[in-house]
Length: 239
Image (cartoon, rainbow, N blue to C red; front, side, top):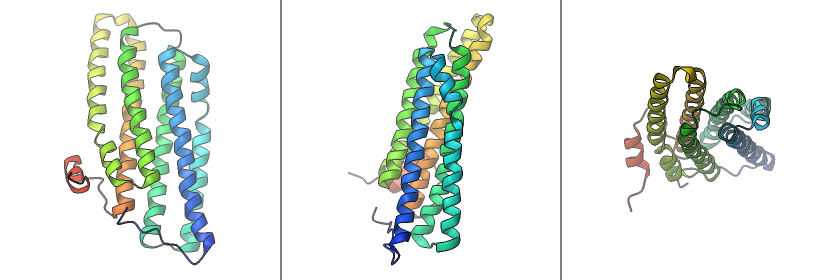
């Protein structure tokens, strides 16, 4: 927090606009997190009703993205923000893009969950899928929390979980491929499960992106193409 100074402006209205913007991002984040949780629950429990709700509710996330983006454009035009204010606007624009894409992935999982609702095979892989999903949703929640608190160290720690998510996804993919080879009758449904796992992995990637934006917001450094090891060494304080 020590490198970020959100100015208190002469115009109280300007302060309110910036705070409203942050609050709307958090509201959108909460909606996306709920969609992701519901998508995972629908998939694991075979809940066709919940799956349909998730698959048909993405318009809510899309409309929030459009609304927040328009508000950012308006502030840029009227206020001509500089320094930390400008970084805030840029961060919001980037963050809502990733949140919208997370919403898209949740919608995909909902649609596949709808097709898999009456399928009972291969049940042995649902626990691994659930495990992956829980880790991904924890990562998303952590990224949103880091954004809310503008906490760089928390953002770095959350981003550091992405390789673990990737490894879980790769291990699950290998198991599903083996199952398809052993039972070709299940190829279609196993592919659907793998696409769901891929969507979960992508949610993890977008969550890591949000963490990078938090670092940019607070520190003013673009770390998108910096290795995770370098980021951790730079921004995690040694105890």
